[in-house]
Length: 247
Image 1 (cartoon, helix red, strand yellow):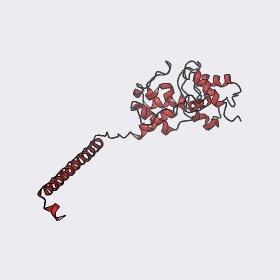
Image 2 (cartoon, rainbow, N blue to C red; image 1 turned 30 degrees about the vertical axis):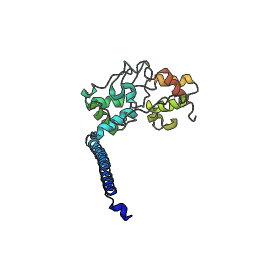
Image 3 (cartoon, one colour; image 1 turned 180 degrees about the vertical axis):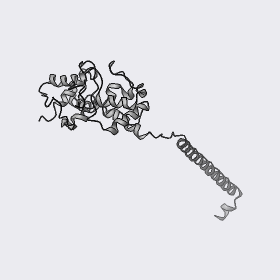
Image 4 (cartoon, rainbow, N blue to C red; image 1 turned 90 degrees about the horizontal axis):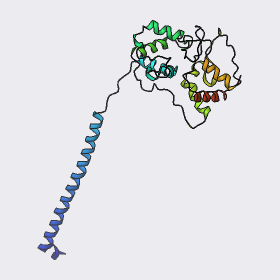
């Protein structure tokens, strides 16, 4: 043992190995430190460059959600862009109308009540609250901007007509007057349509297309959906309505 340590050649070899080991350790440490530094820098840059979310005026946001929930979008187009029917105007220019004018249209309806081929805007006065009307007007006056999550319900495909019809029942705002599962919810005591017999597919389609007691505020009037709801969707709505409890 003592002879091995006194050997100059062995001693030099050991020194060289130690030096090489230290150099390798320093090199590896530098590589890992560099990677860690790059990673932390990238995270910092990503956080600092993320766009800030802008707040939406609460009245405008509420109006946007009402616009979707009460099926305004299904006639006037999403964001009021129009294009659904030539008889239904786009609302991008409606911001020039006064609050009183817009309130009159929303509460009392508009359109040609005698022709089911021309969609008729329903009388909303007995269904929508004054606050909701004000919010809708604020949304229209703001230019109908896009509002996060104020989007129509998704209509599923490939799951059967009744499932599609259930989504359409919400999409077209039927639920607002007829209630969840068709159980009702909006009183309409002055209406002559006390009872409507839905005993055939044709009768169900007819009342959807032609509407009911139109243009006679303050009676709640069901709109003409003719020219708005395509035939395939009418069939799906009928399929769903036929699943509801009768009586």
